[in-house]
Amino acid sequence: MERTGSPKFTTNSGTKRKGDIMKLNTLKTLYINELRDLYNAENQLVKALPKMAKAASSQGLKQAFEKHLEQTESHVERLEQVFQELDEKPKGKTCHAMKGLIEEGSEILHKDGDESVIDAGIIVAAQKVEHYEIASYGSVRTFAQLLGKDRSADLLQTTLEEESETNELLNKLAEDIVNPEALVESELVGASSER
Ligand SMILES: [Fe+2]
Image (tube, rainbow, N blue to C red; front, side, top):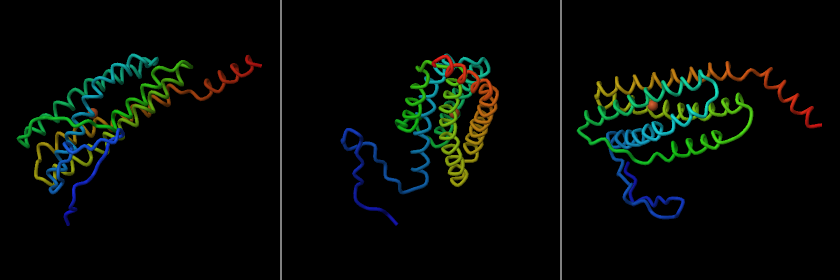
């Protein structure tokens, strides 16, 4: 069933985003829409990851971000190949979700405090990003399969696996970095010295 009438999307500033509205009548249109969101999201990440690596104190976490930056660059390239299979020019559409996630994450990067606690905060921010990407890649991979774009489905699946592996690595790093006993102890020391 087609929903008629032009949707009146508004931005925060209240302006109508007429130009952005692409009629979603086919799965292929939705697929392209989501690919554009991801293409922009990955490009935002290429810029954000070096800042996260720089802000991390743990060597393991720094290395994880550096490795994920390399992977993210290949995610961008894979998306370009996926656009190619559609005969579409690779084009991004501002991913407001990624923008927000990165903005929130950067608040943590600029905070003072205990190194391990800040690293743990950076990990939370990074995992939120990974979960967003996992949801998106899972969907576009399925759309590619449904549309018979087998090569694209494989490419998207490969990226999906790398995002999941990164998320797992972040889980492990969080356990290694955040030693609860050490943190509780330093909190107690801090508390007693304040008295
Ligand atoms: Fe990615």
